[in-house]
Amino acid sequence: MISPSSIGEAIRQARKAMGLRQDELAAASGVGLRFLVELERGKATVQLGRTLLVLGAVGLDVQLVARHPSSTRKPT
Image 1 (cartoon, rainbow, N blue to C red):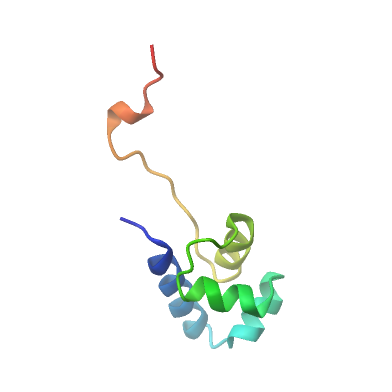
Image 2: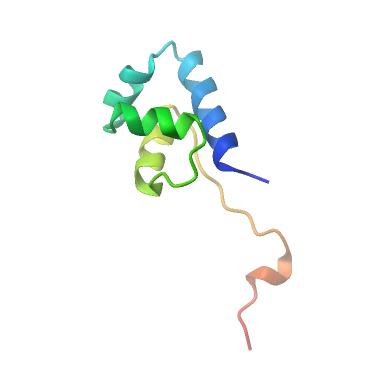
């Protein structure tokens, strides 16, 4: 299961693989340094829109997959 800490860790790993410091990624993403630090630490209350900006800057995509086929059916 995906968690805020696993997203933060993925971002940290991608940032380091790109050879970027946190301040450099924050600037490239258009977010503040404090936000990026909290995101990489797995803070659960970060803003989704800003998180998506950072993910895009490091080349990561979010994919939504239904857990169970029945979860995609409309209620009757």
